[in-house]
Every structure is written in C-alpha cells, then in structure tokens.
Image (cartoon, rainbow, N blue to C red; front, side, top):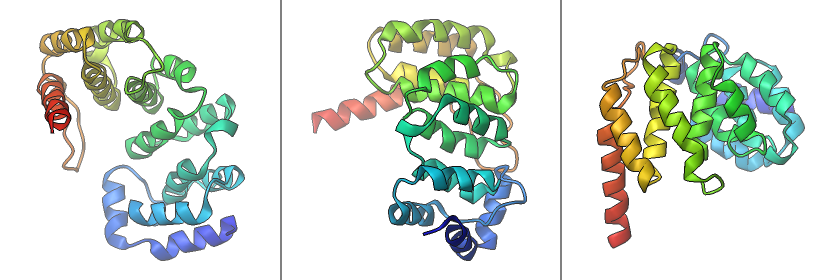
Length: 226
C-alpha cells in the first residue's frame, strides 16, 4: 500500500462517533475517527515501513500518527526524529501511544531523562511515561529508579496537569517492580496523597498509587499460584 492509499483507507474506516470520542480526549479537528482495532488490522497489512511512518506522521492527522507509531522501525529510529515527533504532540492520548513506541527504541532512557524535566506539558508527560515503561523491564537495576521516587514526592503536586498523571503512573510502575522499591513507592504514595488531575470531559481518572500497587501485586501473586 502507498501512503495515499493508507490515508484513503483511514478516511473510509473513520466514524463520527469515534471522532467525537477522540476529540473529547484532545485529538483536535484533523481526525478520521478510526478504532484501534482497525488500526491494528492495517498495521498487519502494512508491516514495518519506516518511510511510510514518517510520511503518515507528517500529515498531522491524528489517526495517521497513531498508525505511524505502529509501523515505524524502532531500530532505524533516531533521537532527532523522536525529538521532532514529541514537539508535534498536542494531546495526551497520542502522547501515550507514542510513549509505547519510544520505549522500544535504543534512545528511550536518554530521551526520557531529558524529557522529564521539560516545562512543556506533553514533553514532560512523555518522559515520565517512558520511564514507567522502562521500569517494567529488566534492563535497568532497581537503584536506577530510586532517585525518581524522590523527584515524584518532591515535585508531583507542582507539575503541569498531565505530567502529574504520568508521574503517578511512573510511581505505580516502579512500585509494581517488587522488592524494596515496592515499600519505597508505597511510602511515597502515602506521603503525597491524592493526585489531582483534570481529565476534562472524559470518564478517565487518576488512580491512587498505593492501593493500585497493592492490587496489582495481589493479582500477580494469584496468577502465579494458579
């Protein structure tokens, strides 16, 4: 498929109901409204196509950019490209999708460390979301995450709206790693209390980190005992 053909297919797959949903989540006006299940089918049909991914991203269309993150090649991705893509972000939903891709690239750790300190809301959110995803792997030692717990405790209530939500997600992810980090994360969660985040006209909520960590660990324990 060519990029033009993909865009035509995206337009056909879009629905007004899905467009309305995506707009409530910040997608803006340039959106077809394609369900993620349909994007997944297109991804399988296209496969990995790094050049097309960059062309789709350049269109500025919300659905095209979501698809771009699915077909881009992590191994061929440069830090320059990711920095450019992050500067284009204007909403939290696409930020979340892009974070999953960034975490799979060789640049994830370096960029996350830079982005977390950004004063721009979507860039800062991206940094903390990538950190949360990195905490799910085994590439980094527990000691790497300890200073970020201190940063979360010290700064979460003063950061921008969606950054607070991402920091809370990172706190949960680090706590779920287990061991000493769990106890440290639970202690931080208790001290910071409830994190207030404005989710706009959506049903989304920011969970309380402590109970969420405990629930996730209990679910893991039960799953292992089966």
